[in-house]
Length: 412
Image (spheres, rainbow, N blue to C red):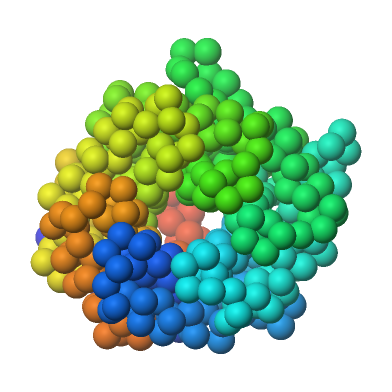
């Protein structure tokens, strides 16, 4: 290890260490969805008990406005502040509807109603029958990122299927589907369609951010749309699901392991397990609605499942980040949020593929999450100390770059 690597390791373990987060909403709703899927797959009493246990945690972190917050500060193009509800966290509402479907509505009907009212309140009419929702409406009440509308739309569809709803809610659901279908893009050299990560109508993106296609978020969008399609079907949504899946299917055939994005400059071209696992669960749920593509989608799901189990499982937890060849990335830190996403995807494998080694691994994974109270360090999170440190290091780097440039000028 050279000096630069040693200093980076020291910084990561001190001033740049990931902040610890208590009950990140994603950890909790992914764990709940996984418990529901495993109970549906196995009918084991253990998973029913754990579903009730995790549900109580999820209900305890629902915000007073009916929405859900990820539980920490982070930058999505603007600084989201901890405590503010966001549209991507509405996957929590999907978890509530799945619990209602399997175990009864009484315990979740009021929290689910409050969550769907949050959607009603923050939806934006875009005209021409299209409706969207801001990613973080208390930060900026404008559309910046497309996937927030997918998560709200999927949650709303699941809610309508389980609890019903009025004409306005159905209009919002249909409008969101129309909007999301309208912003899907086509690459003439590839099948299917894709979403850019950022709203292309905005003028405030730099070119790199503008061209970003986030393949892992696309499959998370596919998953929630597929769940909604099973609960409250819509013809346009069915086509949307197939197009989005066919695009990722072609990437899988091209790269074997689907890359995080379309450009290796993002995320060091590494594999983030929380996202890759969504290719598994997204393809499985899509295979349940796009029946003419079932065999192909499940082939991808099987490949991803095997890659994850063969490369990422270390016997106790899943490695959060891997190189594309499957090797580990240092520093190796247990990320409970990442494991929650993988756990839910293994549960989907148990539901659709039946009994396999993934069942026991899912149990070990869940027990480890429960052992740490579903809380821990979060690399996605930021805080004031970390932001100030990063800003200071960037200034030092700029000074160093400027000094080198001046020395070169003197030499010439």
